[in-house]
Amino acid sequence: MLFTVTPNLPTETLVLNSYETFSSVRTLLLNLSNDLTGEHRDVALAIHQLSELGVMLVGQMMDREAPLTSR
Image (cartoon, rainbow, N blue to C red; front, side, top):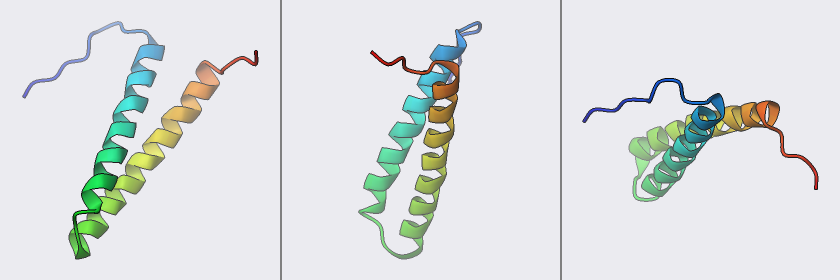
């Protein structure tokens, strides 16, 4: 499998796609952990926690760079 990121994408696009990627990983890991037991479940949940941290960090970056305006 080969992936590439298009050069010169706007920062907003990169941040938004990072957020969506972390969110998807977080959801997949939580669903996977429901089917696991023991040490394998612990590892999946630990990775889930790291992906949750990624979601929070990118979310905070989004808030700083492009805060939602009150309507």
